[in-house]
Length: 247
Image (tube, rainbow, N blue to C red; front, side, top):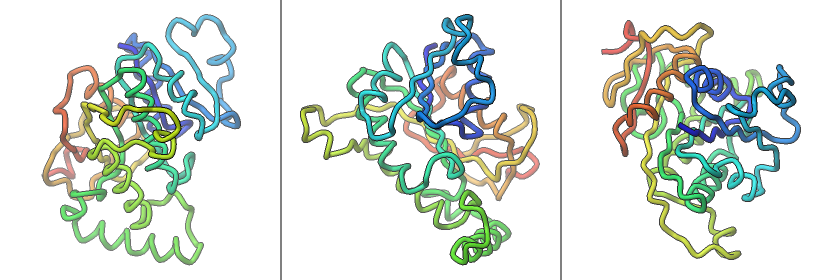
């Protein structure tokens, strides 16, 4: 499989790159010019060219999204607030979808967060309490901007609506593109609280009840890859967390 990855140096996106290449897939990775790779060999060593293509450019440049998607068969989007400003998520999602349309790529897996969209009603009381505390700290400037709070969940919800509704950026559409149908085959994954740890494969994915569970970025990446490889249910949203916290 040839997979385009959008999410910069985010924890899930970075883990996914490792998992996908280890599984023998070709990866096309979109990075900003200022993103600094921990392993510069990935970009300079010609041995990686058969499994990895890195495309650098501005997040406002549609041609770079198209270049990233060229000759691929699927796309992963996994933004996080530490590496991509949250208020950019919905617009960048539209850019990805417009580029997918241009490059005739339809399969899409998007990673957001448990608590986004319809999963908000499934949050347990302890998660509500944690989100309320994080929101207060966020508003007072006392916590990192990437801590999950109601404001970030609102941005993930807006991003999910872009996916579900098949939206593309109208300002670019009006500048030459005539296509208005995305024809996406999407799956949305909503991980619980991200914690450090290796891939274990012990998580569950559920459309229903995930009560504030925890999961490592490595296992989120594993689930995303399986969703692409096994054609996980299209047009559905799944919360994912370790089985001990899933009802």
